[in-house]
Amino acid sequence: IAAAGAVYYLFGATGDLARRKLFPALFSLYKEGKLAEDFAVVGLARRPRTNEQFRADVYESIGEFCRYKADETELWNRFAEHFVYMSLDINNVDGFRQLNNLTEELDAKFDIPGNRLFYLALAPDLFGPVSFNMRDGGLLESKGWNRLVIEKPFGYDLESARKLNAQLNQVFKEEEIFRIDHYLGKEMVQNIEVIRFANAFFEPLWNNKHIANVQITLSETVGVEERGGYYDKSGALRDMVQNHMMQMLSMIAMEPPSRLHPEDIRDEKVKALRSLRPFANEEDVNKNVIRGQYSEGSSKNKPLNGYRQEDSVQSDSMTETYVAARVFIDNFRWAGVPFYIRTGKRLPVKTTEIVIEFKNVPNNVLFAGRHNLAPNLLVFRVNPMEGIYIKINAKKPGVDNVVQPVSMEFCQSCMIGINTPEAYERLIYDAARGESTYFTRWDEVAQAWSYVDRIASAWREDSSSLQFYPAGSWGPEQMDKLLAEDGFHWWTVN
Ligand code: BG6
Image 1: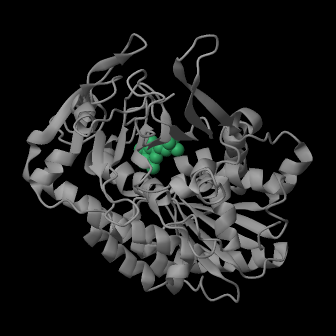
Image 2: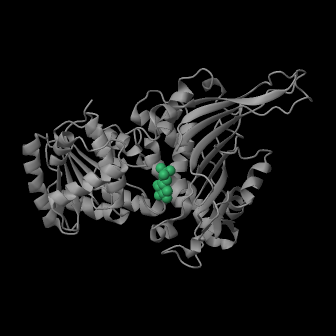
Image 3: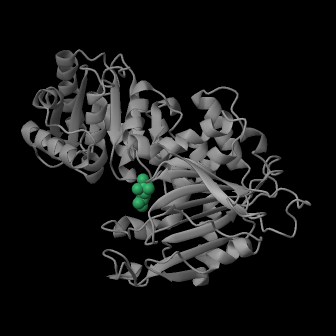
């Protein structure tokens, strides 16, 4: 079904996100009929550009990053018609007035019913000022809806996030704000609730009586690339843990919502986040959270720089590129079950996996003493492969009394291709339909900040806990101890 017609304002239209993700997503939606003819996209950035140049950028980006090709000339021509560009100084309200005039023309030309979707692919400190200018330039006065889509990071800590939110709330209502966490747009993250709540196999076991621990791994092979300037101020805790890791954790841990309605689902997620056991003090942080930074190393015999040698990174930087933590959720369902999370850059594999490790069957006469039974596992493969598999114990064929772990796999990406649909495609489509389930609500963001702020403040007090790991390795050695202390180990990711 096509989303309601709207004008899409792409602030930051000459940037990387637009080129890699947003243009390709819009084209896929158009190709699949999820955007009808009643839409227009206004590319906005400071740099002067003609409509033709802008359309050429869009064409090139689709050629490079989209799963559909734009070479069906007729389709491309029709699509390109909807794209216009305007050079805009975002600090000057006059430009926003001009934009308003342009919008009226577009409404008339494409028969758009006054709906506006503002997508800010901009630095977060501009979200507030741009919103004020949208309002003062008259852009929010049409008879249709207004929606604001913003990228992370939403603040630097709870305090700055609150300030940012207060600015946005002067212009937009909470239900008009769509905060992107692109992990929530990933098919397998969205699949967590279905696997959990639609299967008699899993739902009854989803608690501390049957689950021994949960492991969430989000590993990347890349370093900081050309984002050193941003990353050095942020670090893995703010860049990955506060958002993507906390979101996945809350989807695994949340109680069943009473309805599959955005607010009911988000209520349950925020309840799970509220149940996170806060770290009491510095010692508690050091006992449960490990931070690392990559030093020089290698991958596939290729030498790799250490983090401190990367562009725009301080040569004595104490910023973490790796975090592993043991986290507890103090509620009835999860009492006593450790959740281990880890994420880092320059690790050996690019993967996101969630492993649910079940408790073993009780020692019994059938197997006791003769076998070391491996625990049952349920594994969500989020990225780049998508699917789930379970590990169970079965008899080794042809041999008496030997039990071996075997896996049963559902490989979604083998059937429909990796990353289909793309996260941004889902999210833009959802925002255009006003479907907010997979966007983060303010209270979730605030809760996640208040949790990670305690870690950040302990680290500020004491820098000695930073551990170094060679680029291309699995991170600081301490990460194994974290689990070994509880009698567990990390399950190798595939
Ligand atoms: C972003 C982070 O939010 O997620 C990046 O800012 C990170 O540092 C990226 O590389 C990972 O996303 P994905 O989808 O490639 O796993």
